[in-house]
Length: 269
View 1 (cartoon, rainbow, N blue to C red):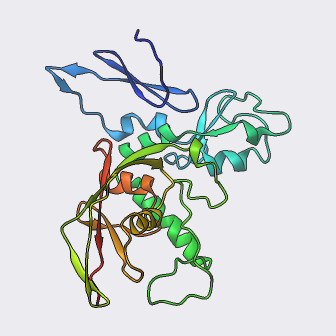
View 2 (view 1 turned 180 degrees about the horizontal axis):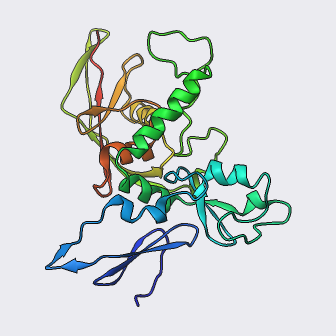
View 3 (view 1 turned 30 degrees about the vertical axis):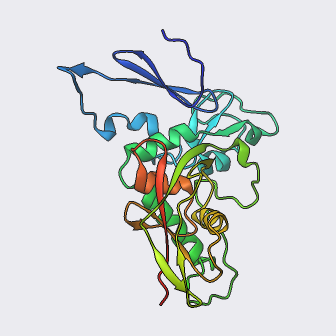
């Protein structure tokens, strides 16, 4: 067996076995049966028992694992269950006598696997969350539309939590910020040419938002006040509240690192 030296990676074992390691030291074995140099196609329901929550019967959302017995559930499911019980619902082992919630860990690797295996699960979940908050008066403020409540960050399973400041412990992602095209616009009667970033490769937290990147580009390129920056992935314009995790799952995956994003100036008028 190969020597394992890193976490949150895909490790080659032999021609038929790969192991994916997660940040909380759980691991998942995937046996790949190879016939005539072609991979055997596996249907989603063949792996359902590994990616379905035993409490709600649905696919993992905010996958969370107990540190005592390493069983995984949806975060909302296991938190609600542990309010009335101190034991694991799957094996019966005691999680903790008085504070079971401190023995839960987010399993990002498992959640990424579920999102990549199940078509449209991520997009549908984000839409449900957006509808939920909108129905309770937390709708995002749009341009040209005045809402009564102050705009708040879009809450999602990708940890867009305004109270969580420890970005250095987050999952990281590599980006390449490219100029979309040569562009020149008139600003106060003078021509302003959009330049290329000197350092276009960056590494940041998956919680970084498109709005953050726009501010960085505006500052680095000395873009005049009042001139708006647009961010794009391929030919799709990206919303300010989207996180790097969302962009990666919706527009970029399964392409590798770095994720290429384009910037350009919004034409006046």
